[in-house]
Length: 84
Image (cartoon, rainbow, N blue to C red; front, side, top):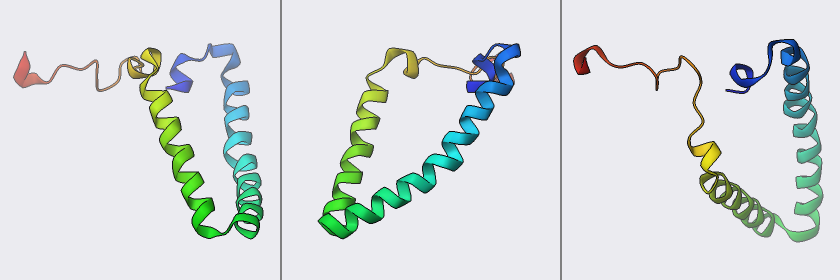
Protein backbone atom coordinates (compact mmCIF):
# COMPACT_ATOMS: atom_id res chain seq x y z
CA UNK A 1 0.00 0.00 0.00
CA UNK A 2 2.87 2.32 0.79
CA UNK A 3 4.54 1.67 -2.56
CA UNK A 4 1.27 2.02 -4.47
CA UNK A 5 0.57 5.43 -2.92
CA UNK A 6 4.09 6.89 -3.13
CA UNK A 7 4.93 9.11 -6.07
CA UNK A 8 7.21 7.36 -8.54
CA UNK A 9 10.14 9.77 -8.09
CA UNK A 10 10.07 9.29 -4.29
CA UNK A 11 9.64 5.52 -4.23
CA UNK A 12 13.34 4.82 -3.52
CA UNK A 13 13.41 7.29 -0.65
CA UNK A 14 10.20 5.95 0.83
CA UNK A 15 11.45 2.36 0.73
CA UNK A 16 14.81 3.40 2.22
CA UNK A 17 13.00 4.93 5.18
CA UNK A 18 10.91 1.79 5.54
CA UNK A 19 14.08 -0.33 5.52
CA UNK A 20 15.65 1.83 8.23
CA UNK A 21 12.48 1.63 10.29
CA UNK A 22 12.13 -2.13 9.93
CA UNK A 23 15.77 -3.01 10.55
CA UNK A 24 17.06 -0.19 12.73
CA UNK A 25 14.16 0.33 15.07
CA UNK A 26 13.75 -3.38 15.77
CA UNK A 27 17.20 -3.54 17.38
CA UNK A 28 16.40 -0.40 19.38
CA UNK A 29 13.09 -1.86 20.57
CA UNK A 30 14.83 -5.06 21.70
CA UNK A 31 17.25 -3.00 23.80
CA UNK A 32 14.43 -0.92 25.32
CA UNK A 33 12.44 -4.06 26.08
CA UNK A 34 15.44 -5.59 27.85
CA UNK A 35 15.89 -2.48 29.99
CA UNK A 36 12.18 -2.43 30.85
CA UNK A 37 12.22 -6.11 31.81
CA UNK A 38 15.18 -5.50 34.10
CA UNK A 39 13.46 -2.52 35.72
CA UNK A 40 9.79 -3.52 35.80
CA UNK A 41 9.82 -7.28 35.42
CA UNK A 42 8.58 -9.51 32.64
CA UNK A 43 4.87 -9.48 33.47
CA UNK A 44 4.63 -5.68 33.73
CA UNK A 45 6.61 -5.14 30.53
CA UNK A 46 4.51 -7.59 28.53
CA UNK A 47 1.30 -6.12 29.96
CA UNK A 48 2.44 -2.64 28.91
CA UNK A 49 3.41 -3.93 25.47
CA UNK A 50 0.01 -5.57 25.05
CA UNK A 51 -1.69 -2.34 26.09
CA UNK A 52 0.37 -0.40 23.56
CA UNK A 53 -0.58 -2.82 20.79
CA UNK A 54 -4.26 -2.59 21.77
CA UNK A 55 -4.11 1.21 21.85
CA UNK A 56 -2.47 1.24 18.42
CA UNK A 57 -5.22 -1.01 17.05
CA UNK A 58 -7.96 1.20 18.49
CA UNK A 59 -6.37 4.33 17.00
CA UNK A 60 -5.94 2.61 13.62
CA UNK A 61 -9.53 1.36 13.60
CA UNK A 62 -10.71 4.82 14.57
CA UNK A 63 -9.03 6.35 11.51
CA UNK A 64 -11.43 6.56 8.58
CA UNK A 65 -8.50 6.96 6.16
CA UNK A 66 -6.89 3.70 7.31
CA UNK A 67 -10.15 1.76 7.27
CA UNK A 68 -10.86 2.84 3.69
CA UNK A 69 -7.31 2.50 2.35
CA UNK A 70 -7.02 0.23 -0.66
CA UNK A 71 -4.23 -0.81 -3.01
CA UNK A 72 -5.10 0.31 -6.55
CA UNK A 73 -5.78 -2.76 -8.68
CA UNK A 74 -5.75 -5.02 -5.62
CA UNK A 75 -8.05 -7.90 -4.78
CA UNK A 76 -10.63 -5.56 -3.26
CA UNK A 77 -11.08 -3.89 -6.66
CA UNK A 78 -11.55 -7.17 -8.52
CA UNK A 79 -15.04 -8.56 -9.00
CA UNK A 80 -15.27 -12.36 -8.78
CA UNK A 81 -16.51 -14.03 -11.97
CA UNK A 82 -19.45 -15.59 -10.13
CA UNK A 83 -20.74 -12.12 -9.21
CA UNK A 84 -20.67 -10.71 -12.76
